[in-house]
Amino acid sequence: MSDKLKKIAVYPGTFDPITNGHISLIDRALHIFDEVIVSVARASTKSPLLTCEERLAIVQESLEGKEGVRVEIFDSLLAEYASNVGATAILRGLRAVSDFEFEFQMALMNRRLQKEVETVFLMPALSYVYLSSTIVKEVVRNGGDVTNLIPEPARLALIKKFGL
Ligand code: ADP
Image 1 (cartoon, protein in one colour):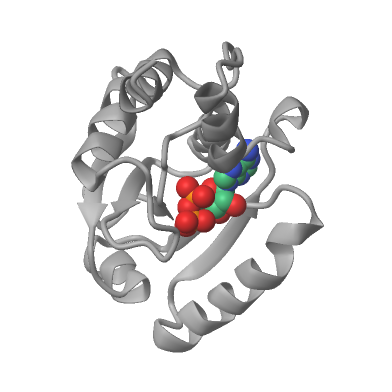
Image 2 (tube, protein in one colour):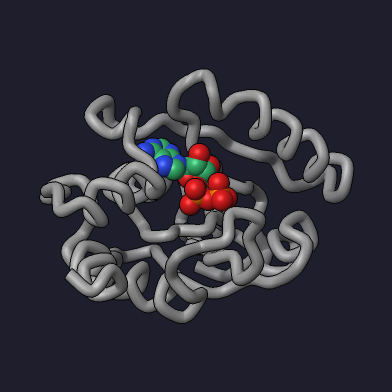
């Protein structure tokens, strides 16, 4: 399929680290889009625990073999970046109501900046609705079990980072 006909979505995030909630969203998006570009944000207001290169490597390893997925780092204005890579959509996840206000603001700003790129919201599998990278880091740091909540490369990276 030529790149012009391809329906491409950009899925931006901090992915500090990627969780099964993120992966659930990517799998759902692959039913709608021909390609999902998972875009790891270099700069983040969230002061990530893992470096950008670590986050990228974990995402790559966790998504290895998934057809229609590309992983890269992005370090610019999201709306422009999405348009430059030929995406027609920005993919974001909605969990509980708490995500809504910020996501709504961001979607409207991105539309203002690039009107032909739509933000598409998907919901994860129910079992991941309350899952976040933040909570996973807390659990691992305190020796808790996160099996089935994050991919193995992410679990190993956190254990190493916390010196456990
Ligand atoms: P950001 O710093 O851009 O919010 P995150 O990595 O925290 O980066 O999240 C990226 C996107 O994935 C956001 O839209 C977020 O709402 C969504 N997301 C995070 N965790 C989940 C989850 N468990 N289920 C569905 N979406 C999620």
